[in-house]
Length: 65
Image 1 (cartoon, rainbow, N blue to C red):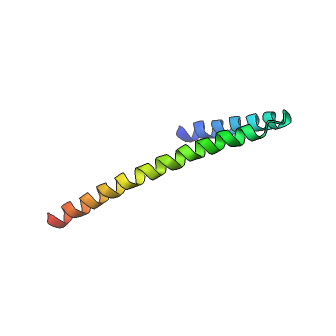
Image 2: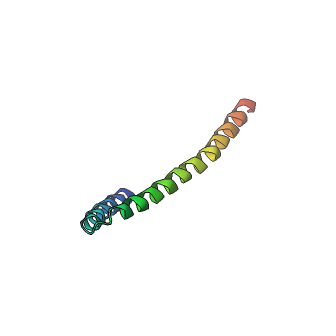
Image 3: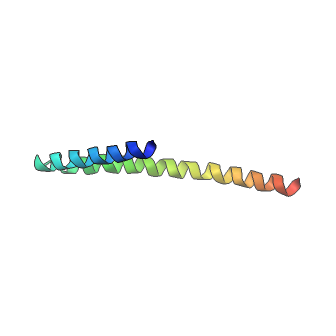
């Protein structure tokens, strides 16, 4: 279900980009996409240390069991 929403969103972005390019406002979609990708990258970076900590705790618990 999530993939469907992402696909619909991508189609909407493409249509919006074409419309804005025709109006000579092509930089706006790139600005919005750069903000979106920055947020995605930030979420990925903030998730990674937490997952590593959990994996290390599991290894330690398994070692002493």
